[in-house]
Length: 141
Image 1: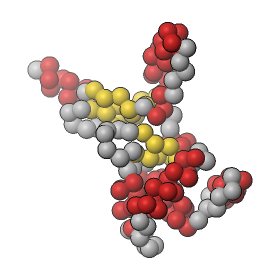
Image 2: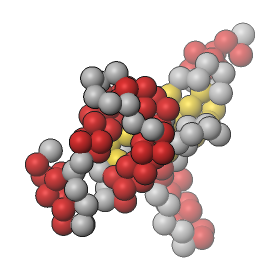
Image 3: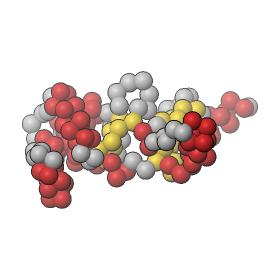
């Protein structure tokens, strides 16, 4: 956390107790919406934090590269530590399971976009919706 404090200070920010608690909750939950983070922070023994405080701090922490987010569905974004962002999110439309796949699995797709459109895709922010192995096997029966 001291490196994080130094990194934040270099950008004119402080590692406040609220930010520290939010980072701890993100680390503990792995992937979490702001509502889940508010609930987790509310159970850590400290004072409750409002959702606006959670959102403001997540925005600031994302700006400096501490957390990252993705949209697993059409609801709230899901946050995770930025050093945990090197994967794709595969979301099953049937059972809702979220599978993490190495970002390199999308290399052919990213290469096609680059070749055809000159577009450099950042797929770490992407969720791919479809059906997991178990649900697609059930549907085939």
